[in-house]
Length: 254
Ligand SMILES: [Zn+2]
Image 1: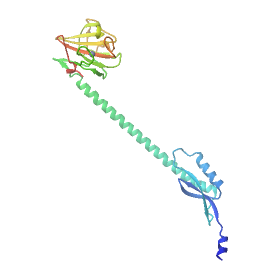
Image 2: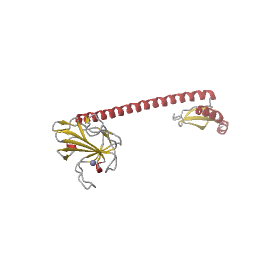
Image 3: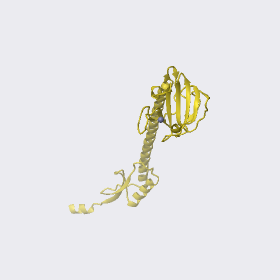
């Protein structure tokens, strides 16, 4: 009896379609399973987590369902996964934009603070009541300070402010031009007399825009930054002299 029972059991073979490793449903042939998979994959968006596979299933019950209904079920799952993926992408994009916006705001605040700090000190320099302005309207790099020896034979009598070739130079205070021309190692140089024994020198200029006797204000572009004379790169050598003696410009500016 047992033997008869055993031999009369029918075994069905079906093909289960898996999504991300989990069986979703079964169809009756491998061809049907392959058709469904290739249909689902044909327009699957890249990045959507929807990995399809086929596994053989042996059982004593017939679990296979028609191809079209298996497709419907799987397609529904695919749409849900796609929507989930797109929502996540939208969320990431919004997050990225928000971060970018915050970074921009922080950068603007940093610049505003810098400008405020700079303009706060803009008119703060003065020599015995003479208000001073910065000679450059850029943020130069200080490459050599007053008094530094370095490789020079003589102590440095000014302040070196490196910035782009051609940058406009403005006098540190109103005055009259008393020298404008070439002056050996100083290269092209302009000297402005501010009265009361105070002079400012601007050396290594590229071009000179004023002549001796020109009355200048802090808005007169007297020259442009260059690298003439004893210079290794474009910079303004700013010198301040009081009664003929060079003083440290950083006592007043920068
Ligand atoms: Zn110098």
